[in-house]
Length: 109
Image (cartoon, rainbow, N blue to C red; front, side):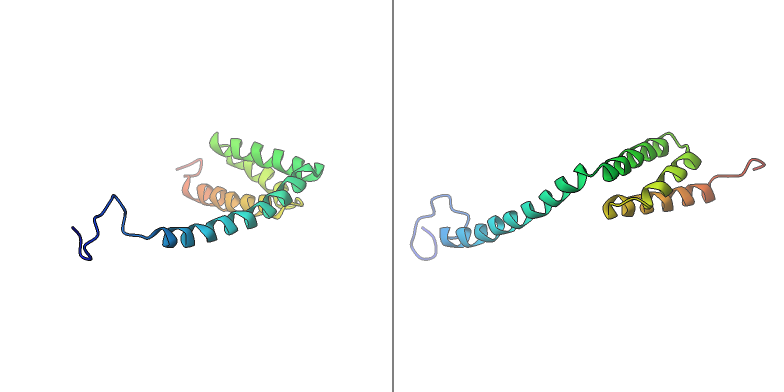
C-alpha cells in the first residue's frame, strides 16, 4: 500500500488530469507552427529565392571542399538575395570563411 492507502497501479505519480493539462498547450503550440511553414512554402516558389537557394547550396559544397575563395564569392551573392533566412546563413558562413583565411598560413609559411 502507498501513503494514502491506495494501491499504485503503474502510475508515474501524475494524475490523468495533470497529464491532459500538460498535453493541451503542446497541441496549441503545434497549430501555430503550421502557419509559419506555409510562408516558407510560398517563399520557395519564388524563382529568385530558388536561385538564391541554389547559390547557397553550391557555396556550402565549396566550403566542404575547402575552396574558400570561390565559396566566399558565392556566399556574397546569396547575402544580396531576397530571402532573409538564406542571407543570414550565408553571413554566418562568410564569417567562417574569414576565420579560415586568417588561420591558414600564407604561401611562404
